[in-house]
Length: 361
Image (cartoon, rainbow, N blue to C red; front, side, top):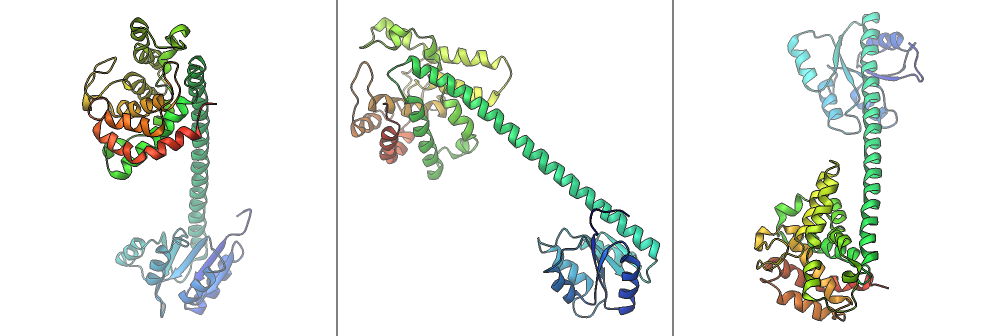
């Protein structure tokens, strides 16, 4: 039997004759540790990890049944295969041993050819199990790595699209990064407070944060003269500007035709289409009201409006953090979900810090 290394077997039996016979049969093929008691077994296990244990059942002190119970209860030793050695041959005895975790029985006195064949077969099974575990572990690592590579590529593409929107809209700068950060701290606090927990815990935050970057993707379709107008829009221009949520939905629906990233695109479409809806139903483009507005849209509405308030826009100066927070709070029950505003009120200092950290150059 050829092996890259000699496998180790511990033979545990209080009968000296059995130890001598067993070692003489096995030592040509294996490194054999002949041990006269379970106490000695546990002493040697601290220094040597065997590939298999041959364990006598009837021993003074710690019996074979007691020993295997200890072994299987310890993570360090639980996977070592154990074959019981016994003069007993009843089905009840075999059942008792197998139910405790033994993989097989051999009877005394040993039949050399049978003993070697039993051990060889079980060690081969263990080796195949180890190879299968390694294969599965490597496969899992490969899948995780490929998934991460796809996600990174996906993130880069989405980030580039978001950057393109910001590049065209000269006045919003780091708006997308800031709204992502507002969204993150708001969701974390909601979960901490047990608010909308069932829905939030079902979210994949990687997908939520990534897809939120496309909430303004519909601005791609708005002309530069309107998008970057250095002043207040006319009523006609504002009507056109108000089409960007629906245009964003259309852009994302075109992506959905390729059948990829369904979860991500579904979230992105929700953010794009509903972040201008208002709690009282006066928002656009759908005129949704209160809880009919998806939670993504209700949260993004606060993040989006707060950022518009605290930063310079062509039609307004930047409000202070205190003024911006007060306007959000005053919008409770009209523009914003009252429960979300209560959570925002706790976090207004965090929002202000995010605005400073990612301030436009």
